Length: 208
Ligand code: 3PG
Image 1 (cartoon, protein in one colour):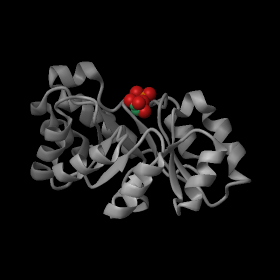
Image 2 (tube, protein in one colour; image 1 turned 135 degrees about the vertical axis):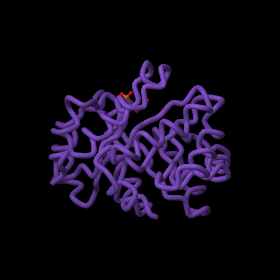
Image 3 (cartoon, rainbow, N blue to C red; image 1 turned 30 degrees about the vertical axis):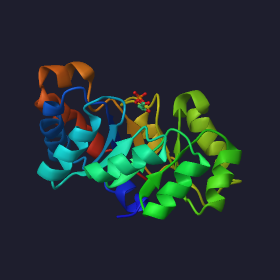
Image 4 (cartoon, protein in one colour; image 1 turned 180 degrees about the vertical axis):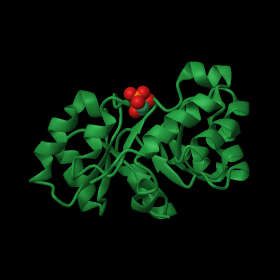
């Protein structure tokens, strides 16, 4: 599956920071039940790679990927664990080269027009705008629509249930990313029903 196909699966890609391996499968199942199949597990915890591996093995309806990928080594480790896509907060030449060589579905992060232009030169048409809110949010996206008409974005960082609907109405937004579908307290309490409800709300958000 290429990145555009993965981004089209649902309006929201949840950004999951998993502290306990045992939370991975029930969390993924709750999100999938709510209608959110593409899941980004950030490589920010010791549990992350094992969490990806368990979701890949035990939740076949999910499309699990790795987030916060910053090096080719992390990309390789994520692929080895079963990640089907990778997301980065930025875009370095070494990472882009590794994604190309391994054929990984990759969502690189940008914050400037120059970065977006460089990635367009690499052939990318779908980019993560990160940190979306701090970078200018909806006004940034509206402003680049004219000069960068072929590019689509997944704004992430500071996007929540309150702002996601407006982001998704923008013509150059393919989907949004965010951590609000898996609140820390709900995961800690194993409140999978709450997470399923949050996912179900997110799954109904409209895209143009
Ligand atoms: C992150 O950096 O954790 C992601 O971009 C998610 O950001 P958020 O917590 O603001 O949704």
